[in-house]
Image (cartoon, rainbow over all chains, first blue to last red):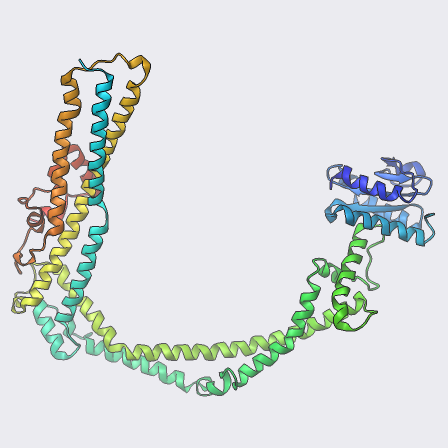
Length: 114
Length: 414
């Protein structure tokens, strides 16, 4: 799947859970976060996703340092992001399952009002 | 005056004639006749070898040496000496082989049902079979090795839940567990249980593989001894026949190298052998002559094909509307088609006729032992020096000489 297709699949999954995603969201707007633009993010729920593709030139932007900073932010519960790399070679059903399981997990931990 | 239509008609006829002649020449240049001659030569070589040396007795060797002047068969490396040396070597190798403890005990070691090594191999294979099964079930999942390496379902597993890989690992692990469930009779089976089983099996597999490798190495060695024993026995049993064959070939090679002129006059005391020597020499000459004729035919066929292509190109050119008014005198057409046709037909016919005569030739007795003989002249019916070259124009002959060096020794052997 390319950038557009993968993002569209995840957008559907996230919006099906009532999230209002802002496309191309600049995470640094929320404060001390890396200045990266996410493919879909709900600023109110602080939940979103990033579909990393070569096509969109994501890999240089999401360097090891940036990803480490995002990992720390997610681990602290400040934001909740699902990171998916195109190199995982996922098909659409797999991507839907992954999105659902991620959101199930957030809901189970009380971080998402299902 | 004649027009384009007449030119094309005569050109088409000429092309058909050229095609037919080129086809006939191809038959002369094909290898089939030469293969038949070579086969006949092999048959004569075998007959001559048997006639010269019926067996390897001293008397037979002495007779052969006298008939064809080949003292080597009586020297320090005579058949008797060579055979004795090889026999001694083979017998020594067999004795050493039979003294090997693995050889003497081979029946108790490698018998397929009762041999101790065979039984041990089977037992090891049976013990290893479950490991094969476990590995097979695990590696049906392409992600299995990653699950082991990342420590999935152990405290070491560090992939966070916000990464897609986390969920892919999860799904892959679930599938692996599902495959093991029917065998493990444990409804609460987890991936960590499968992982423990897999790692345990790998340890035992390594030990079993080492034992199997050792047992199979011993089995291979003993089977190698058996094969060596068979081949050495066979070499011993065929010693006489192999040496006889080798000496016959050496004698025949010697006779062929001498040619008719330098044969020992003593050969005349054996008319049948003398006849075979003549046949062998003559067949060699026939082969060379056919080769030369084949090359000449090939060259000539090339010329005919080139002329055919040229005519076709001219016809196509004349068919263009702008050339419709072209006119030819009868003399021009005659010179263009009739004169050339007659000349080439004569050349082709002469060459094919020579080829037929050479193929039919079998008057081997005409040649003398101890004197020179011009086989080429005898076969082609031409006088000495008249050969296929004479059948070609000077430029074709020059091309042939340039390609093949000197003209055929068959024709120049005067």
